[in-house]
Length: 309
Image (cartoon, rainbow, N blue to C red):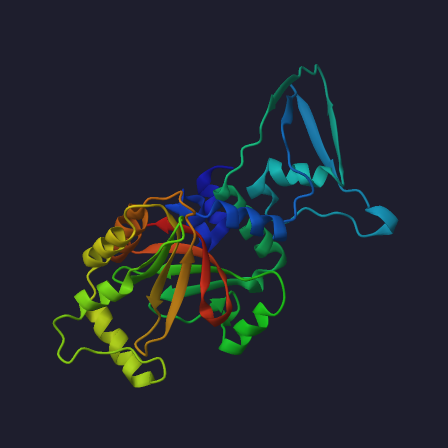
């Protein structure tokens, strides 16, 4: 199945068939292992091709009379991978005439992007209510059944698996870098200098007050109205140079009331500051971008991958 057909099957999530700007390989691997729960790690595979061959995949009853193993509806999208998984509990019968076979050994193709695709299919099949969507700005979390109230989000977090969130960051939505920790343990605050530059012309200067809703809304309104993506990019790249970024946090503004969410990103020294400064903050503001993340309490999120528009 080609990329166009896979995209059509994914519907509104078609964009995860793209290569990511950033992907947290370790987090993707661990959540893939926890949710998909592969039974073994393939070291190599053997592929056999037959001439004029008919292939039949027959379901077999599981041990102790359990229900027959059924292929997920998205088998055509995942193709050989799920067929191989099914073969563990089923049988593949091949019949044909004038059989000619060639055996090719090689390592299976694996990547974090493919694991994200696997995760999405697993959730679509088994936990569709735990696939969440949120727009920035906007801030209203929803699933396929509709919008979710705060107590519904809390309920989802009280049982496994952790919800997957697909964040649509629109063109013109500010991305505020807040703080980074370098691999050597050195903390690099970013937002204080950015805040000062963005609000330098305001008199009086709005101040953030977490305990006062009106002041909080006024503060974030001023910061948002005076946001300059190039300044944010420069402050991020200046703060994170020299050295390698261990993790970096961003704040996204959900609405005019000052409601925000945090994006926690862990490059673990594998991505340059420019990936987050120029490509994420600056280009994301100009064109928008998309994020796949896992949800934490308080609408904070651990980022699995970032995709450009």
